[in-house]
Length: 128
Picture: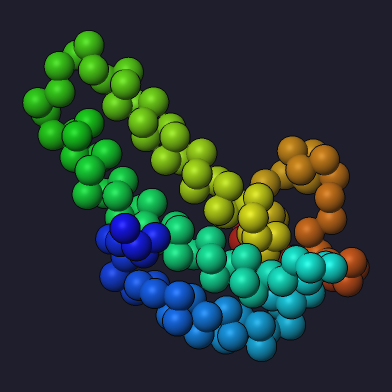
């Protein structure tokens, strides 16, 4: 079984390599490189897995819960299944790659700097 089964965009290792090569050209991405950690590869791999998780959630988990036919004694199980999907999404958003760690308050990350040591304010944050 292919690790890309269900994906429609990042459907092969070659597509992920192409994305990683594009990301590696961005200083905003490579500023998170450290030792053997290459942020472009981490991001590309995470985006491929996120595509798969989101497609599975939309095709299976959400319809199962919202479809109206689920017995009340199975609702908790469906919610737990969705929670597991969200746990995996969080991992692929803020644990494997560093780029999106600005989404999590610094105190939740143990005070790790997410600006790559540049001292610049992260311009990706919105004024929401």
